[in-house]
Image (tube, rainbow, N blue to C red; front, side, top):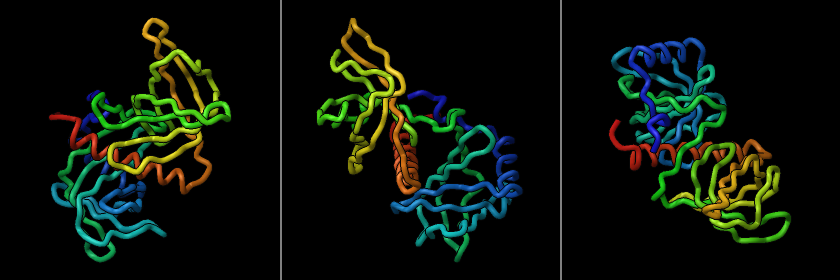
Length: 228
């Protein structure tokens, strides 16, 4: 897996980020053991000790101490870190010594899928007709995916409309409407590599994809990233 996906932020930059998070009230998305996405803001950064968060308005609340993953954005960059979150009333404490990692500089960072990872993306509707076209998943994001199909036909084209089912290891498969945004045919090896844009018509669906992304991010980091 590409090391660029999980590049560690230098200590001085991490401290600066935490200070800015307090001043500018960055929004942090927190994913723990439950399905709900928790939204918090950082109230205090105690250097060398603790990050203190409070819940954003309308957020779900954590019920117990647990391992979590945080995602947040600043300027053009997306960051994440893993930590043990401790609940103290309406506050969440985590160690400020945790390592912070940066994702690619894009609106919807993509997670590269290892070749031996048990995941796939299958096309179940193409051109308005039911089909079953099994594809290998190459990467995944909250906004789309990239996959490879090991046959010449049907020949995919930009803006083709598809319904797909995404399989990610033990998780329940989920369906999404999507369209092809780019495609490259390898006629010698009889394969087609294509990029999809997911059609996310509701905030509920957008949040669901963010939960899936963060959960997958944690799994890949722990099991597939290897030593840094």
